[in-house]
Image (tube, rainbow, N blue to C red):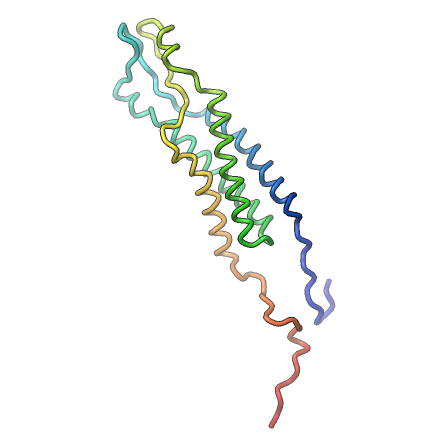
Length: 189
């Protein structure tokens, strides 16, 4: 409680090291969970093995980019949720809170890709050689381009921009160092 006319007491700032450490930890854990989810839920194309090796049917060709779409969706949703929560928590840092959240999101995307590759990327050639004609062999879990990695950054930046735009100047901005109640009256002539 502030007495009437007293300047508001500023919130204690969160130490920089703690802000960065918490953001890194949150996106690190989110990247591990998202990488596991990417590996578990990605639709993989199925190669049909024949005497010459493996081939993809027309329907299976459409599923070759399934892991890219799954990675993009998981990353975007995770970055929007976590980026929004962290941005609200770090809002007293001003523009630096956006940078902290954006770097954390990039870390989360990289960790997600690394965990998914560790858990689900099996080389295709060795599995095709070991299969018999008529067998179905799943395509390896992989990203076919770098753009799905950007979904983490886009999601975090987008939610930071929306929150900043909707809460812009929500708190009154002091233009003088004195409270309004102590302003002298204008001179009368």
